[in-house]
Image (cartoon, rainbow, N blue to C red):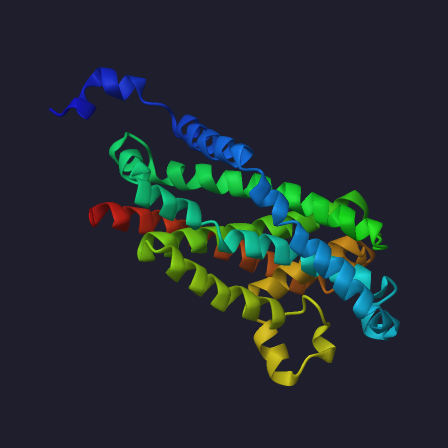
Amino acid sequence: MTALDHPSVRTARASWAGQTGQVFRRWIVGTWRQVWGPAMSLLQPVIWIVLFGQVYSALGELPAFGDGGYIGYLVPGVLMMTVLYSGAWAGTGYIDDIRSGVMDQLLSAPLSRSAIVTGQLLQQLVINALQSAVVLGIGALAGARYPGGPGGVLVALLAATLLAIVFCCASSAVAFMTRNQVALIGLSQLIVLPATFLSTTMMPASLLPGWVQSVALWNPMTWAVELGRAGLDGTLWDGSADAAALAAHGAALLALAALAFAWTVRSIRAYQRSL
């Protein structure tokens, strides 16, 4: 019988929720001590909304942008861009833990591997939720209006959360596979820019080249943006939006989020076996 098999040890072991909470607390305390990082990440959406919103404001006269003008069209896209870019960097924290030896200590402790992943993911989602609220506030100050009301805002935040889970988990899985900061950053850059511009983040599908429209149909960024946009502009509630397509987008994002989470748990276990 090993030490961990002793009955007293099994009794003292925290529940999965307790383990997750402890991991979350560790990450959120670290974030609070270096709060300048998440704060500085908000500069980019400010630039996107103010700069692009003003430079391309004339596009708002086109029928494709609806009654909200270009700012109203752009804000949901910037919301998803913010969580996309933030999520793509989520794995860097794991690489720091691997380099410092903290990850080896965590894996030697009686902690569920899924609790390790979930605790860090919850910290990322809290940051993303705060960033999303700030982006929507900046959009409102820039002139965007949200006819969808609180329900529409909630739908947009839910879509942003699902997108964040996909990319946070994917980044974390890649971190455990590569164990290299440069490789993770390089792969992130290869993904986030095409994901942004090969979608309806900044332009309606009708104004995109044909091949871009085809790619955008299968882009998770488009799924999240369209779902969030329909919630914020109220078309989700007045029946003018394609409810079936939006439901399919939401289901696809949920499925991707589940697969990405499973990939991360599998990657951390593969990392442990390689030690």
